[in-house]
Length: 490
Ligand SMILES: Nc1ncnc2c1ncn2[C@@H]1O[C@H](COP(=O)(O)OP(=O)(O)OP(=O)(O)O)[C@@H](O)[C@H]1O
Ligand SMILES: [Mg+2]
Image (cartoon, rainbow, N blue to C red):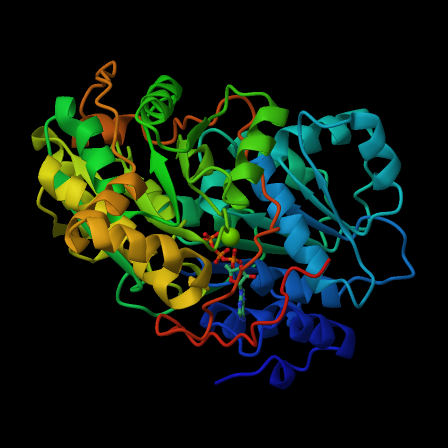
């Protein structure tokens, strides 16, 4: 067990960490924070949900000179939502020291950003908007001593690499550069080292690339049965929050509409929606006002929403790295999660490729029947009833209950109550426009062409009421400790 105390951090940062309820370092934090403090360039690779943000954030905050009122730390992230989320985590970490991070991203007010940029010491940006500021000379970067590429392999992929080169050129040569991601294909790592100064590579030793607290399943199923299978699985699993990944924007819209038609609380998110719509959908999801988020890969990376219990790959992802990030939206910070990938018979090779990369076997799940689904729904109602037996004061209902019992058979009464509580699905037929199966050959060819839409994006804000709730639960097997205090203090 390594405490943050033993890393020689300053009191204000230790106090923030304590306020956030962080007690022990995670492995990536233990290994990279000392290197970061020494000023070394670092390529850090560790599994999803294991605290990479604080791993690069803590040393950056330690090195901010509060007297210097200009940007000293720059973090670049692939989507808006992720930029916002990372800025929020930096703000929590920097709260006691009094350092604030400013998220800058496309679609938000440029003038307001320009005003804030004059005094902010840390900026978290998406590449496109940052380049706008650089070209308009509305951001001063000459005092930047630390630059981070979060989701580094994505940032150095085809869609972003030129922007990143331009951004790095605008920074002082004398600087520290830190790259983090859960995945780091060799060819990207090679590009990365050319942009850095003799980097230390830290790869947290672990047999598998995915976290062990995510149970990974697949169902083999023809394209035309996918939707019905999804609704059955949702009825059986009754997820707290679930993300369903689809391959294209159209697909996401169709699946979200279909789920709504069948009575699920679902909304879609993808790169074609306005910034406002994306933010509001994501915020609703975080607050549990919608239970199912249907998304393209725009939501695959970095998002930290602790209540996500299930990830469904409605369409198997184009590249194995994307699989790692998608399923990593659950099972965060030691919590348990489940992922279920839909594989059409022609896509079996793609699944093998994923298993090869992650070094983990994905278990086959039987396609559930509609009877199993309705038993699943009933079980949800039964659980609720039993819970209510334990928790509620039922005194006021006793009189009516006894009257009913005099007239009817007791099991009939319970059956009727359960029927009323069970969300019987409407049988609305839903048909989706079919998509081409992914073949390993196609997947290789289209590598790097992601479905981010212009500029790539995401949205975060961690108002999750019970974040870190189960931190010390049985799933907490990655050296996490959390006192369960309010980690959202702002
Ligand atoms: N040492 C710690 N103790 C307790 N909780 C922690 C610790 N470090 C980070 N966390 C929490 O764990 C969660 C996941 O962290 P983070 O988002 O940084 O993961 P990540 O490694 O960047 O994942 P991804 O690869 O998906 O981006 C966050 O809610 C964060 O606040
Ligand atoms: Mg991250």
